[in-house]
Image 1 (cartoon, rainbow, N blue to C red):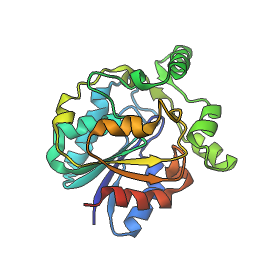
Image 2: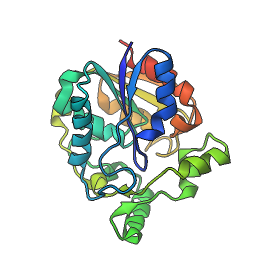
Image 3: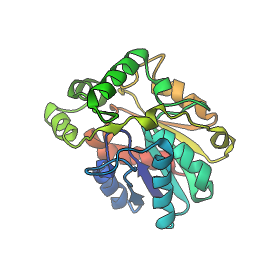
Image 4: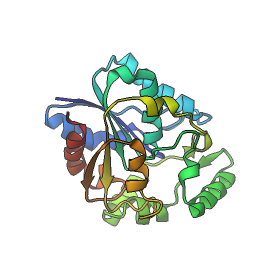
Length: 241
């Protein structure tokens, strides 16, 4: 059996994984879902990417978790890459779930389509506190396009504004690309958050990993809501030896 640590993406907290964790545990695995610094209600949102990373490192070390399968969803891909640099000896495999894989020296915003960059810049200016809140229309059409409207509304109600600084921080990833940790890319075939093709998750992001295991499943970007049981099954496949 495996020990999974599931790192959420933007606008979420660790509770997004609750049903997935239940499914993993029902099959005998251990699963944990920390909340990244700057996420959740009433927390300090003046954080950078290094603080994001450190919060996950601290969680894993404080719980003394070893031989883990570390998964990052979406923005979480940038975090697990940096976490791996610090505690690679605790990690058995990395899983990137429709996740950003940055080139050395890039930021997340460098990998967003031009139209998205313009939108996010406008949302930051309007926020007054250097955060981004995802409009419901984008959540419905691009993020949770594989679910009924009621689920789209109830899951959207769980989202919180996302600190912008970590999106623009340039990441030194030289140590990450020198690591020999096995990697998997779990790709949901109807994910339209990055436009399919030139900007898509696979093969553009996935191929940056070099040697990796590809696992695919139907679904959109937020399959932890629309198909948590199916996602758990694919996580197990992506994480096995």
